[in-house]
Amino acid sequence: MRRTVLRLHEKVAIATPVRGANPRTALAPLGYGEFIRRLCRSLPALDPVFTFTLDPVRARNRLAAQVLRDCPQAGGILWIDDDEFFEDSADGVRVISEMLATNEDLIGVPYTNKHPPIRWVHELLPTRHEPDERGCLRVAKLGFGMTYTSRAGLEAMARISRLYRDWPHPHKIPDLFLQVYEPHGDDPTDAAKLSEDFSFCYRWGHELGRPVYLYARSGVVMHAGSHAWSARDLPGGVRS
Image (cartoon, rainbow, N blue to C red; front, side):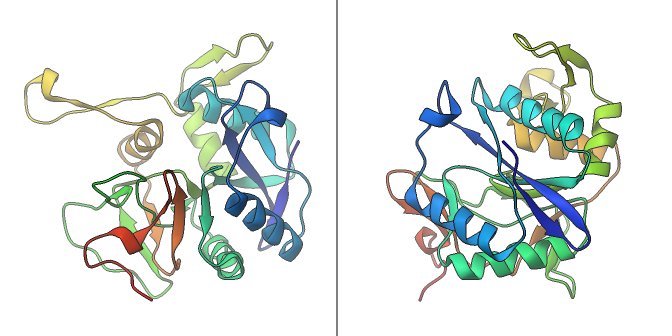
């Protein structure tokens, strides 16, 4: 299944990795479902791209490959995880529209993790940056829970990625989300093994030399766990 929304004059596939051996049996919070329905009522849409989660690396690789292979009309992928949604769905539609209108190749909204201690799921650059006039803040890495990647950017990453057979399917697909080790000092055993989304951002910046952006005008994004965690749970965080 595939769902598309307009990014200016382009169509965008919505990709959601799901937790379940079969996409139709996967469970997702009601908040996610309500947001997707509102988003698709407000923007021209078909069906979303789903995959079952073998693990996040292969799941995201399979989604990206499916869009690049089967959706030539899609100008990129809007990644929306099945445990993320906006506190205000109507505001979320505005945020997604504005984020897509920046025309950046890799841009996402800020959200937190979903267990104490609560922290942002993005990494700032070593030198201080401020959001530009569009509300875009350049960062080192970000999570893919609510993030856009352009088709051109995915194709560029595919060109520098190893291909592998996506068993049991016949396709050979690029390992876009290969987990990498980020060095810390001269001792290789001090390197950090990055998550699949941070690994993508690391290679995006270090191997392609491209910027990673956070859309700072996002409102409150909920991350469903034992409850819907958000910036409201941060010390000194967002308050009503």
